[in-house]
Image (tube, rainbow, N blue to C red; front, side, top):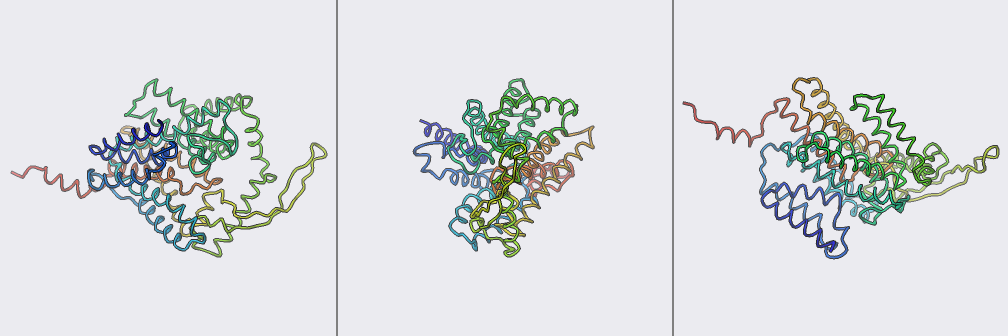
Length: 455
């Protein structure tokens, strides 16, 4: 029954896309994030659903959709350059079998990110993409939040829609994605036109935000707690009464402690004692190994190059309590440990050039969104609240991701590149509206045809 419902829904969207091809683009965002082919049990698992919808989205734009207003930005060029470089390093990857497995999903995510802004040529389309993105993340967040409330969480055992501990369904990754989505939820509640601001919209938005905040608790993810702290700081940029907000947030945090699972509280306490935590100590050693590896291999080792690491280090441990508290050291040997950091993930796999392209892609996005914020803020008389608030939300989402990425290897996750693609679309639309960018060739041609002949 579950397969029939999912296939029926996807089939209906595919049929409607024959008249509105952009629906296939939205469908791919849903399929890419939710992975409905993994939710079912039978026929749907045997279908290459992601590839089918990907081809439909691209072919629909090329063959059926209007190209009016489509523009290719500098950041899209950076995505293409990074994609090409990843392809090159994959050809010479140290671990060919694993490298090609990762390439299989990385290239689709990056290619779609370079393609998506071309389709988001109107404000309505842009909002629709943000809405589908938020609801897709929300499908996992609501499911995970309900399981957390009813005691279904735990480190390494937290399951959401799919019983899988990888990709967006891995606890730390989903925690980062859920918290990064909250600014977009607030934007839609305030500025949405598809679902206009209403008390029912606000109730759902608040409930969704609460569910997103529950994900780090259910997953016992320390990364999620750091992301929540970053979100709180960023919110101070938007609220009118900052001291009041900070005070209420502090009270809410203190009041929530008695209701938190003891396992979660104990794990969060290890943040301050990272020097005696095996996981943290291992990460530091992996980062050292990756840096030295990049010095010897400037072009990186291709996807999953971490499988070649091996190192021995002294792990500190605390024994006893009070006056009898002592720190002892034991020699530990580890190998094939994951990067646990997006920055070192890119460095180890794609080398210094890959890291430069990836950082340039991120840094340029922060700058572009900040420029929109300040330019719109400087013209308060004709301020475009929609563009200002959307740029702010996308920038905050990216900042939360970049902080979470310090501790999780999510550099090539598709939800990140979808965020980047939406930033590219916002920048393109804003440049056209505010700085009088030259119209596209198609627009010029149409205008010349429609212009009446001179008398």
